[in-house]
Image (cartoon, rainbow, N blue to C red):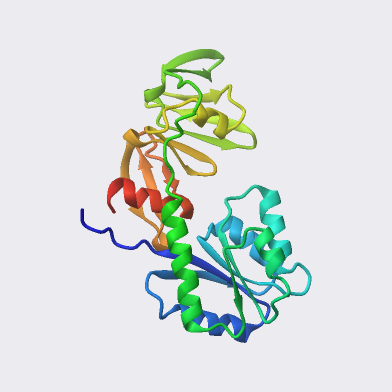
Amino acid sequence: MPQSVAATISALIVDDEQLAREELSYLLTDIPDIEILQTASNGIEAVKLIEQLEPDVVFLDVQMPGLDGLGVIEQVRAKGAPLPHFILTTAFDQYAVEAFRLQALDYLLKPVEKERLAESIGRARRTLEEKEPEPDKAAPQQRTKLLVRANNRNLIIDAQELIYATIDDGTITMVTSQFEGQSNYRTIEELQSNLDPNLFWRVHRSFLVNINKIREVIPWFKSSFQLKMDDKKQTEIPVSRIQTRRLRTLLKI
């Protein structure tokens, strides 16, 4: 089989020293298929950007005023957001044990050497490739019928009629070609676990889509995509950066 083209790895650089951010950015430009999404100068900004941008890899300075690098990892975990791979950078080696306790992917000592950085990126790439999602063989029994509450009626639809579901403020809205209404499921995760994993795909933390109801794949900013769905509104749904890799594999993009 022909080898697939290496997928781009999206990265966020976090360091309170501008010179360190610029130096790491410069070194990364020489490594193929690396996209620097943004840089951050403090831990609080880093937590927000990780949640918004969902980078594959975060280069994270350990020692920063206020919220330090280890605190960033703890806060991201607590928020339940998709976890990137953290590569910690520091001028000191005494944080290594704590870094690996928090399951950091790697630990780079400053000044960062080009060869060591390339090795770290290689490790990240291998880990990301191994992380491709597979159908859960232990999933609950799949539902073939779904209940949708619409216009004070409880309507039953075939699961395959569902175009997409989305959650907002704790309420799940399910959209079909004919109507939309509310689900009796409490979370997207609960809904997804009762549907065919080969047909329904969590493309974003707030959206579950029927892959047979995707009308168009639209290139978006910074190598990401949106999906135009087959509903009356032709709704455009963002694909998270974590799921962009699966999209490329699924549709051979």
